[in-house]
Image 1 (cartoon, helix red, strand yellow):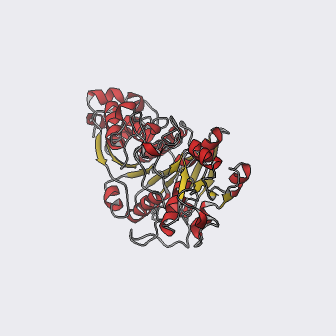
Image 2 (cartoon, helix red, strand yellow):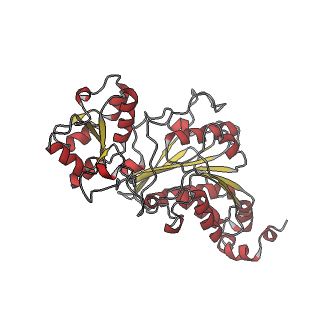
Image 3 (cartoon, helix red, strand yellow):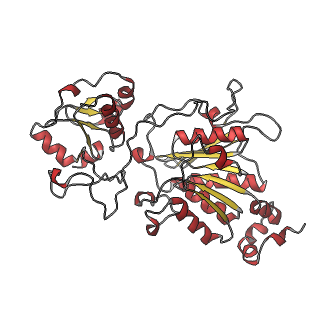
Length: 411
């Protein structure tokens, strides 16, 4: 069969460097055109994955993402733009992808991947690429791929580092291959590992890690090179260092055979996020309650608007100076607290607070006029702590320090 006949004139021009590439050529390009990739996430990792899979000529691509584009995404999610802020990420990404390869077949799934829908969503895939940003989704995707015997390219990023591997529960030889659960047998406790919103992420980092993920997917679909099965690549951007370690399946681990086994970790106690702040976004707090004219009305580390139960740093400083603050609760880790803290703050790390059935000492003395104030580094963990305290102790009078210790320091 003449595989060149698969390509129209514009595609033949588009892929001519692949056609001329030794060890790749027209046959490998035809395999890409006949393949279908399912990509979870159209965010930081998803941006280079979706861009390069499309540009390389993967014929069909499914995008799974429930989120919309926010300005805080744009320093790393380069598949989106200012013009698509507020649009579903699936639609924004699809428009960019069609600009690269108009003939690509894109299926948008504007929904989060869950235990209930994962098997259905990955069913048509020749390969699954997981660019999700939380442990719950990663375990769901891994379990679904293990059940369906789908190859899975998985990657993750945080701060300045990331990692990539290719998991496949059943190898072509019939042997058992490694999965995400062999790398991480148990999920961390809620709040134990910070999110990118809490810890931050270097904008270019997902470009590096996501490009590695796209490379592994393209190699696998085109049947070239050595796939990254049984190996994990790590990347440290600060030290410009790549590392690698071996990963073998755990023979003692029971294979995953269903999606309803209760094995997937529940998300932590995160309150429902407020809409992201844009130039025209107003504070969600009552303007009459703002004690400091011209004060911040959003968290600059997360983009979330100031809420009615937030103290801005200036409001907190004013309340503290007039004796209108009760317990000050620092929910960071001890090493963070020791490196610098607000005067008279009591350190109870978030996980310790999570495990304890007793309220923090001094919480019972907080009043509406002098509430307890909870803070962390950037105001993310403290909102989790706030939700947790209110759930367990509904009568507690407590507020969150907007932007956390980092913003208070700048004040």
